Image 1 (tube, rainbow, N blue to C red):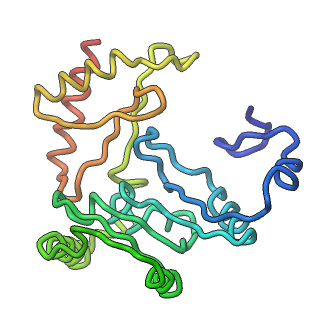
Image 2: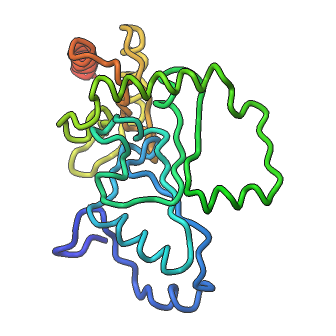
Length: 228
């Protein structure tokens, strides 16, 4: 439940101390999180959550891992989604935006952690593909050259629109969501869906998205929503 006076998004666990002190060894291998959940329905971490968790994870000897596959590469107005929370992860995973359409993913970490990998057997068939990495380098150059980072637009191009059939009860409108998605596709707009019930429109376009594209998206969505 939500506590009076608490930030939205924070849940209270009944008697958490026994779990912290006795239900675990007290050691944590790692903690992985998205600053803004993508497939989860475009849900942003509550203010203060990530700094508090990072502090406790590191105190327990764990590593903090940021999943920036969807929120990375200037999509939210910062280069990385975690920047809005004032934290610095030990490991960052990235994809999607790094290649801007080309299949490419990467993992960035500290020299100390990277050195540990040299003591183990690790193999990747397509790692370091020159064509994909060239595309990734080109994307980075465009982001830097065009000064795309820092555009004041809230959380920018990572938006979630949750569809419900009852605003009071927040009843998920699953069928309606699928219908609108299909109709929008027929009109030339492709967007994904997410959330636990699959009733959240995931609006996460690429950085080449223009104002005209945004207007078209809004018009098409508005038209099909009005037909429900």
